Image 1: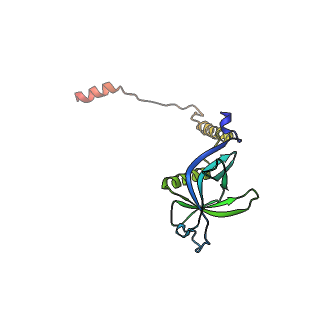
Image 2 (image 1 turned 45 degrees about the vertical axis):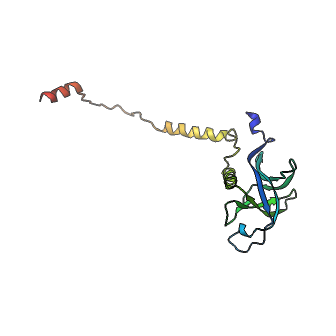
Image 3 (image 1 turned 90 degrees about the vertical axis):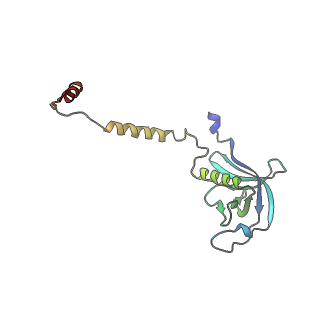
Length: 181
């Protein structure tokens, strides 16, 4: 179990066999990018969403050369933007090792691949992917303690003696009396 959450291990959350990269034209409207304006294809290859430790990234790999990286986009706020006219096209903010960045357009041939891409990004954003349950051990303890405290707060003890008079009727006798009447 300890090896599963080892921060030195790289996890692949999504792998798409074909993604097309476009050079982005200058944005013409303030509403966002339009995929219909992308005409200059510059690359195609594989896309993976990976995590290592607490870092997540979108990595574009060359499909012809094993493990040759074309571009990396660390997943953080603003690293992926949807275009306004298609569900299969996205704008990626890619960075190099020196921290310099640029924007490129990516397109999925298959709508299912773009849907999986969106879902995986949403899970990462909501921190539901690659979550070590042992990281939140104190959180779970606090929740259990709160539940126990709520149970302890309900005190049904009587402070002073109370006399109760109960008149109990035998239900069988009561039914027989009603039938006879």
